[in-house]
Image (cartoon, rainbow, N blue to C red; front, side, top):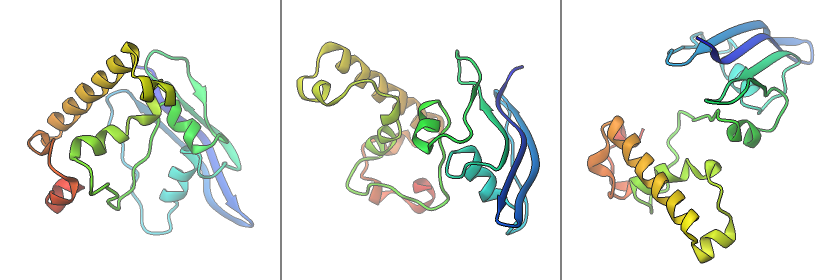
Length: 164
């Protein structure tokens, strides 16, 4: 099976300090991978390099989005990495408490939408169909992770474990 993420010879130096030294990683579709190590081992630096926060000193980061050709993504801005299909989350919880659970999940889809400001104002059929698909996709996501019962609940009211 073709890799969806392929990292080859990833090296990151800060002055004379080599935070990453020729790291290789291949993740295939459906595979679960973990990056484990003690504090200071370079885990965050690795994620910063593959998501565009840092531009690596050496090496190649490639992703293969579903139905698309393999693309080299190292050295491009984080928002462009996300547009190509790879997003990042953080350990700390950052929810919009004044919005529902569904609305919070829908926000994560904004970078995949095609409608602009005029679509939001005039709501043509294409934009309405896109909105409906996003709502349905987000319902499916919440169902998949067991949070469908909270779909219309305000995010601030969720138990801590559900917020994570």
